[in-house]
Each structure stands twice: as C-alpha cells, then as structure tokens.
Length: 203
Ligand SMILES: N[C@@H](CCC(=O)N[C@@H](CS)C(=O)NCC(=O)O)C(=O)O
View (tube, helix red, strand yellow):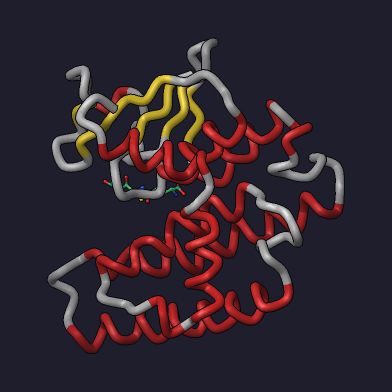
C-alpha cells in the first residue's frame, strides 16, 4: 500500500493507523501547493479531488476520504480493535464520531487556515469550534477515548485535527481534559513514529 500524505494535514490520521496496525506501506509526500508528488507525478492523476489523504492499494485501487480510509485499514486487522466489527452497533457509534470529527472539527476549522479571512468571520468559526471542544471535553471526562476505554481510529483523527490549534493561536489548555487526551495519544509509539517519519526529509 501507498499513503499519499502532506505534513501537518489530516493524512496524519491514516498514517498513525497504518503504524498502529503494523501494516507494510510506503509514504509518498505530496506538495499540496504544486500538487506534485515527491516522485514528480501530478497528484491529481492519483486523486482527482487534489487533496490528501489517498491510499493506493496493492491492486491499484485508490481510496480517499479519511474516515473511509481508517475504517478500511482497521478492518484489515480487526483483532487490533481499532474499529468495532462492521455489523455492530458499536461500529455505528464509531462512524458517528468520525462524521462529527470530519464535519464539525476538520471542516469546521479549515476556514481558519485562510489568513485573508476577516477577523469577525474568523471569530464566528472559532466560537463554533469552541462549542464543539466543550462537548468533546464533557465526553472525554467520562471516557479515556472517544468510543470508550480503548483507542480507536476516531482518536487518531481527533488527535490530528486538534493539533491544528497551534496554527490558529487557539490555546488548547483552555480545555484541560482535551489537552491531557492529546498528550496521552502523542506518547503512543505509533504516533511518535508517524510524526518522526513526516518530519524526515526521506519520508
Ligand atoms: N474530505 C476530505 C478532506 C481532505 C482534506 O481536507 N485535505 C486537505 C489537508 S487536511 C488537503 O489536502 N487540502 C488541499 C486542497 O484541498 O487542495 C477527507 O476527509 O479526507
């Protein structure tokens, strides 16, 4: 498998999951501005949507959309427990979380990357995001992870998007439970390995 990724983006989530599962894969870096891959291809010929993450399977299929990719990966090694069984109620709950993260946190914070956004508009997005953080803080007060006592693909995704607060000058410390949750996940060996690989010139 090949994971097309760009540092500091949502592709960190499937990258973490690949390492949590101990799967064999190759990383291909994408320049999100030029849309060129590190090996000189036009990334839009791989994912016409032009954004990471994209997973290339050994049979040549390309899978996009982070929530779909992480569930596909988790199902390759169900014994690792990163996603509940596909026909279970618990799986629906996981999908509920993935959808919340992708729409409310990921897409909800994406406009803040736009430095030309007027301050009054920016504060509308920030305030909405803060209400979502309040909700997450209440949830994580009850459980160590989003779906209960154990780490799932939803946590890899939430860890990734919470990491963007540093780009928006949002002090995550305002939500101590979220801060502790993120630090806990940051310490996982798979997370460390993914961050190191993405920071390396060779990745
Ligand atoms: N709906 C997609 C969104 C992916 C996405 O937002 N990718 C961003 C990085 S986090 C990107 O590559 N943006 C570059 C672009 O849109 O040109 C998903 O959930 O995977």
